[in-house]
Image (tube, one colour):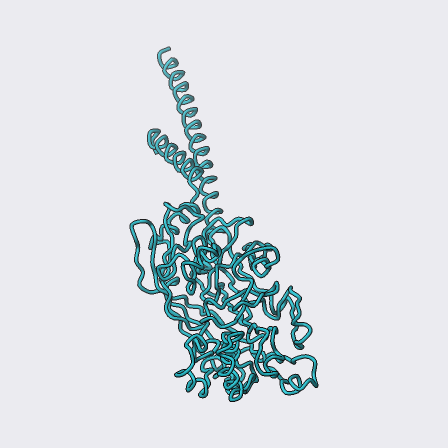
Length: 482
């Protein structure tokens, strides 16, 4: 190699080393990611994830209703039935990219019942559960003089607790008597004729999101929601309610399918789910080792269920003041007196302990979390857990329903579970970004400097050899001349 070629090669190695020092390859790829560059971002895997969300449903079966109502037992006994497992497949459709660096897409859901993962015959098992339709009617009609007689007629024909198969309770909880009465009673008394838990909560209509992407918004605002179904607040709330309840605004929240890269321990993940009345903040809890990766574990901030001294618009349900540990969800449930809580009221204590038996709150079963790889923002584990409860007014009707007035009756709790470490393309991407690319980049930088040192050494050696040769030639020339 000529001297000129070696000099050019040294310059090339030096420029390459400077480029690799100045420009972080991981950062460049993250920039491509938030720009949704097709060659970097696996949009197909996001549009139709190969791994479903495993939805585990646990039903509270009331085993001693007759003895409690007669006064023989002091507490209602609860028996947990489940899990009833469904696989929820998510599909993102109708992608539209807008000039303001936002993207719109519609999320569709498909619930599948995997026979092989469930207890044989579980859907046909009979459970005793609160008659949510009747209790909702009673709450709506309570303290309304003109509704007292019609409500007492309903109570004469309808039981407060009913036997239902698991399937009917989840998907087809109806009442033939109330279907007939619906034609003569005010609409607000029977807001929905099907009170099936999963029918109303786990199989909603398609939802259209508008989210941020691109360097215009920066890393921290990547995939943050701007609107849901064209609104800047959660569905079910009127504009008047929204003005008084800033926590229902959906901006700066996430639907859970995308997180920004470079997450910090001080960051708050505002997660929105269609079963929630507002985005729910999750805070950093701890670091968790996952193979060679270090994940950040975030969990729902317990204070979202705390009302003491805070006006948060979620401290009462249908006019009933809620204790700490419950959050109103009536606005998104047709006005039904329903409230969310942690499963088995985990980490909270309340009057329910005086009249409910069978609750067993524990961290192993009832603690929910999200685990994220912070450099890429990739969700590795998604496991939020919620309980749905019926909140009863202090009724003024017949003695049998008045006995239950002011009580909180758990209905179901749901564990949404998704692990993405089985998705090969995602794991290759995460390991490449976190482990291999930094090593490869540093190795190239070191190799460039070694190459430069070697070329300088060769140039120096060649120069010395040429000098020595010139000196020998000069001596030989003088000898010849003599």
